Length: 462
Ligand code: ARG
Image (cartoon, rainbow, N blue to C red; front, top):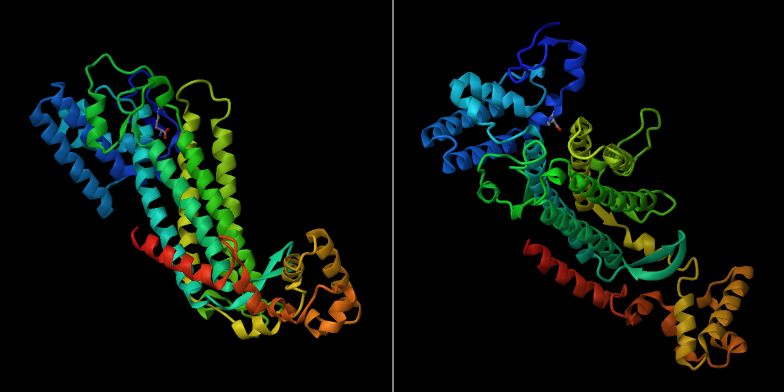
């Protein structure tokens, strides 16, 4: 307990309670907004000077002191005091201690409500660009790997059951597509959030002649928010950002899940660099894909952040409530987790190779060529449903006799369907089957090569 240092709380008794100080503060996590907070303040002060609300000289003093504060925070010499609650008051308090009464003019026509709303938008704008760059690095790693496996084949699975042969590169590019949607969702999120709430004040705007357009322009916003009541409590963009992070987590965890399976002895499809595996404290032979498991596991905290932000926003009475302070915890949590997971994924992809010989050796299991055989019959004039039945019966028979379709002679095939001829061999050879995929976007070597070239060009331009 002691006397409050909060100069802005003259209305209150001025007694402080340690429990309350610790409970209400956000400084421990919102200090990372310091750069954008200072940038916002400088723009606000410049606008105040342009509008004649402070003098040019006062603006100069404020700007210089704010730069000093920024340098001190960056250097780690700034002393934070939780009594100041948040980064906004910590910076303003330091400003007033530096330049006295002039510092007290900075908050003219501003509230922490429009200030923090502006800060998060500024911070998120930059964060999104960094996250997009990370996504691009993962995409590039995947494309580089796909380029090495433009012809090698592997089984595609549906329901985790062997389905059809595909080109390994095409499988890898499937994640590039997912990440591309993530990249574009983030771009869209950035476009939507890039409007400036400054000038909305606490809730109703200000009686002072603030030039909102000019502050917004100084901060690189594409425009301003048009309803002060909405602007001070709109955190839709936070929920949207965390949702975008959640979908990235979905995509990374699905890749992780595949690769955890693929590097098992049962599959043996890939080998991940030793750097990204750990061993066991007890079992000397172990080589565990812990990094991938953590990428999968971290999805949980990102979803948690999404549930948290949606719950925080739900049923708050109109405009700003202190509940909103919790937004940043979850925004930062989601962003940090995804940034780490993207970096780890890029490193793992760069250090992974496909064991093509082992994959090829197992391709004759699971009747991967069955669909191609049915489509062969279609080309011979058999209605598809009939063809499906013929091949299904053949597979059942082979399974009973522990045979593969390739073990059957043309005569044996013809006993089931006389449309089958010697050229059936074309569809029983899986390496040839993949070259026969004709539809746009299919997993053939030619289209994989085309797609690899497309992505190399497109991602190279980013
Ligand atoms: N730290 C607060 C937040 O993050 C800043 C806004 C506080 N506004 C207020 N009227 N108490 O939301």
